[in-house]
Length: 227
Image 1: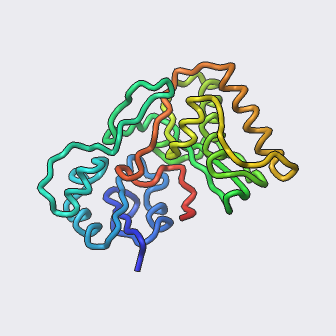
Image 2 (image 1 turned 90 degrees about the horizontal axis):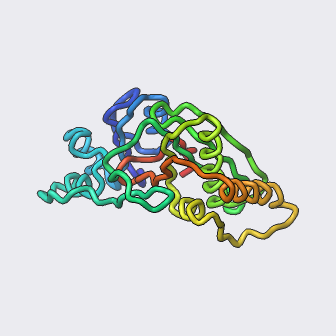
Image 3 (image 1 turned 180 degrees about the horizontal axis):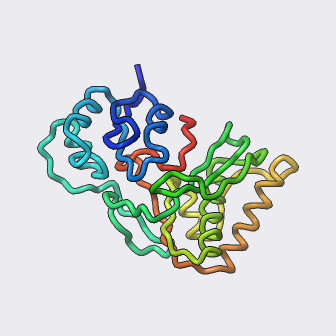
């Protein structure tokens, strides 16, 4: 029995899938794919029958609907915030003219890689790694700063999405809080982190850096599928 079920309303082949890799194959590279995960097959089947307009991108309201509740509460999966702290669009509104970033790890700590993709198409814009030894949070942090630096070089004001609250906090504070030791095995990732911190402290940017609301929207487009 699958631990989670993925509904794909709009993708290469709509349907219900019992694993993230199977779902990912249907949504990667598909413009404005609409998909969401559910904890049980019954909820997934109900959501698939009722269609994406009732479920996709609606946070807590969609969860209530999938259980057959008559609740009409508005989506409240949390409002994202800009790097400067101002409120941004609610979870139900994805800015597709954006970059999404994510990290892939093999152990934590362990080898780290990250990438940034076009949120609309899933096309890879940049990637880095594997870096021999690091942590998931440091990789998420580096991915965001890499995206900021990339967009600044391009003269772009695109939004950046990350699904890591910790990394978003570190970018905002321009400081990391990690127990990863500095030694020969972690020299590469610490060199990149030090450069990223220096960049943040000497550069400004107009881009919004927002939380990707996984519960409302499904997995972030840059996800490595290592569940």
